[in-house]
Length: 436
Ligand SMILES: Cc1cc2nc3c(=O)[nH]c(=O)nc-3n(C[C@H](O)[C@H](O)[C@H](O)COP(=O)(O)OP(=O)(O)OC[C@H]3O[C@@H](n4cnc5c(N)ncnc54)[C@H](O)[C@@H]3O)c2cc1C
Image 1 (tube, protein in one colour):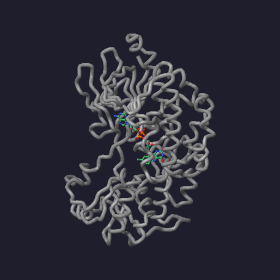
Image 2 (spheres, protein in one colour):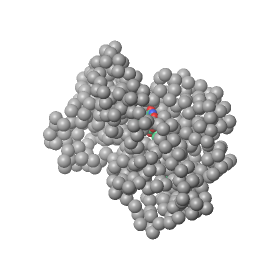
Image 3 (cartoon, rainbow, N blue to C red):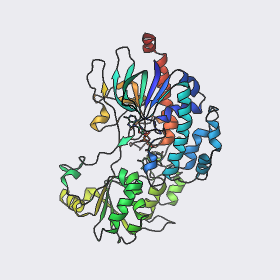
Image 4 (tube, rainbow, N blue to C red):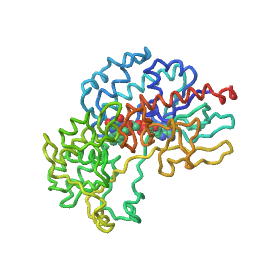
């Protein structure tokens, strides 16, 4: 029986594997049986579809290759052209297209190790998960030739990326976007993609005096505003024509409290990460989205951007809100992500209700999949976009943070480690003895 099946070969799914690689533990884990299932023909994920820059520094992506425990098979990557290109962005924000090429190159190297010592299933779709009476788990798959199969393991890591739910969420009691007649709507996932930006360019150029309405006040919202302003179609937009409609002011990242005060940003004690002293380390806007916010709010040493304004959604009545939505040339809902899931069945074939399927956080303690009744499944883990793992205090982060930590660095470090260790404990525990 396999030690673990990882479903989804993006940056999240590769997280525990890359953590083990950095600490010299990967070869022995692979020898105990790790299978990765990925529907695409490669490992590395889906970031390449976005036409914007990363909001993490290039240095954070390089760290995983710099670790001393890295297996010999991965060490040559450090000097390859894609890593050298990433190094040019060590203290800057690389395009996501480069992050994608970099992750795919790591994916190729890991795929080689998996294929040689363990198991890799590319172009393979995972369909569902069944818990077995002996404590192991079956993952049902459909392979590239359409044939169905089952992989049995002691534990499963679910890392299928995120989904956006924007049509039916309530903006106000009784008011959803599904109730509004919108001229054009493009959720942020599409708006930030290369294809979506082209479409937005055309819509902005033809917007006339109609507003461009961005709903939401977090990373995606400010990234969308920044990306739109870079389009030729935005050149003729009037003052205040892009409206960010937010429920609350976003939190902003600063390397330390002094940098925040220099930027005239008020800091509460709870905004400071005790481990790093950074301000809003987990939840703060970073990169180009942060610069957008600085421009919109006229921070020192920046050029103000009059085409974008922010409005407090709470100040509008439901009627005013739906009128604004219906008059806009383009509406861009930026409501974040929820983790995609697979159906999970118990050993009698009954479908279990996952908390993520009801729109809640996907994981609980040690990043284990959470059921709707609040209990966690022992040997099913979730990682990646939208999972909503609540970081324990030992990992740092600002006490005021209560959002999602969606970060490649965290997947490849702290969260990857949590899951790796929990899997090893399971393998050494009583279920292992029964199954052996
Ligand atoms: C616009 C945007 C910008 C971001 N920028 C950053 C950033 O700068 N820095 C940062 O740290 N994080 C960033 N993130 C957050 C997050 O770290 C990334 O989204 C990251 O790529 C998430 O990785 P993932 O593995 O969860 O998802 P994905 O990269 O989407 O990988 C999921 C994988 O699962 C596969 N899959 C799905 N379903 C199945 C199935 N049934 N069977 C088999 N395979 C399946 C998919 O093919 C895919 O390869 C950003 C997110 C977004 C949306």
